[in-house]
Amino acid sequence: MSDPLGEAKGATLLSPEEREGLIPSHITLHSELNELEQQNILEAVTGFFSRRRDPLSEEFARALHRRMFNRVWKWAGTYRTSNKNIGPDYWEVRTQLRQVFDDVRYWIEHKTYSPDEIAMRFHRSIVWIHPFPNGNGRWSRLMADMLAIRLGRKSFTWGGSTLRAHDDTRKRYIDALQAADKHDFGPLLAFARS
Image 1 (cartoon, helix red, strand yellow):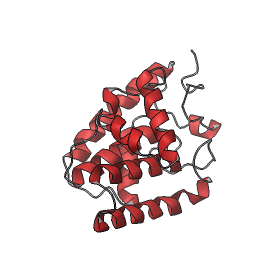
Image 2: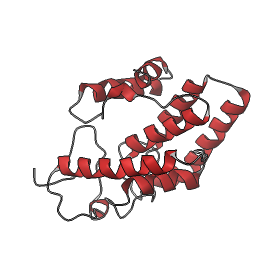
Image 3: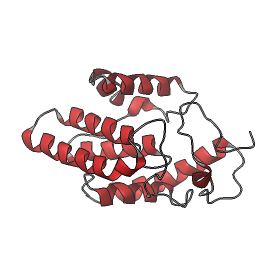
């Protein structure tokens, strides 16, 4: 495959402007792009998990995405400027994220759900908003992990896989997200701890 940003199954399509944001010029395959992004993410995880920070802020959310993808995408940590096949119109991203952060603070304060369910509802909400051009699934899973830890739980295992497009684990994850879209969080809770 000569186009590293071609239509991978289950991936969000990037606009031509977003594609131009690819930093490394040596990338020729989608698998190379995934590997480079994964290396960048591992560095971010080390840095962000070593500090106790509040994941329920716009500043933190953007800084985490930036750190996860800053060696791969020029626009890392910058909200999308085009509409996607998922999420609200791009101009509503900031407002909807703030609403989610406020909702989650309320759920925590009032113990509305268990800590795991709060983290899964948080994950489902922010992955649906799809605030960035790319990397939303990995970013939102890490955000949920950080929230779970803040709530006294362990990070999630997310099916014990990298959730690549060709992976059966990814299908189970997508199915669980679709159930959560219909207000059934049981499959997503089970998947996240499997």
